Image (cartoon, rainbow, N blue to C red; front, side, top):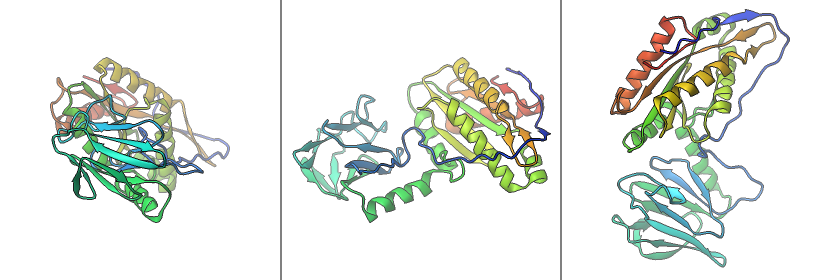
Length: 304
């Protein structure tokens, strides 16, 4: 058990300095804003819901293999499922001999030309092809935002994070899970009100985002509870990251007009295999360790 202890949530006088959290790209899955819209694929159904990839001069291979430009690690997807490329001012799609075939607007194809708004089915996943901004493209992006993101933090919401966790734990690589809970959060809400509570959530989310690996999915599971997964890393690596996050949050007080809030995290860490073979077992183990961290003084990391 890692039990590096710092002080409880404290209050001290300070000048006014509020903080806000902007929507953030998590693992490249959120909307890309640019002055000039580029042709792209948007995943509108499946485990990578919301993932986008811009289409340029290089061919894009879609498949289960991690070497693919758009990798979809699902049994329904072949290792190299289909190819999309640009030819002059047109975009073409070709099935690469996939087991479950490639479908364009509901029809199996061998090779076809893509048009704005076309839907491509790759195994259990659906993608939309867009060449320009349109009402439909914006509509899909807004729906994706509502479906997978927490509006306050920009992290994945509970449902989507659980779906990712289910997919990742079924793979061959080890999976680490960090479950984080803000200490004494109810006291903050009771004393300062829910708007300040929201500000604290935003600041903590920003700090976690700044120090987490770019490829680590981040989720808000509810209330003041956050989660993060690490693929292909040891329990020691996950525990070390948890300590970094705990230290970083403790070093970033939340500035209010009338006070300064010193916020801390209690974190439980679990690893697939030894701590659970399913997402439910892994969450249960990390949750037990998180509460053990709280029961033994808060502002701690517990990994055993």
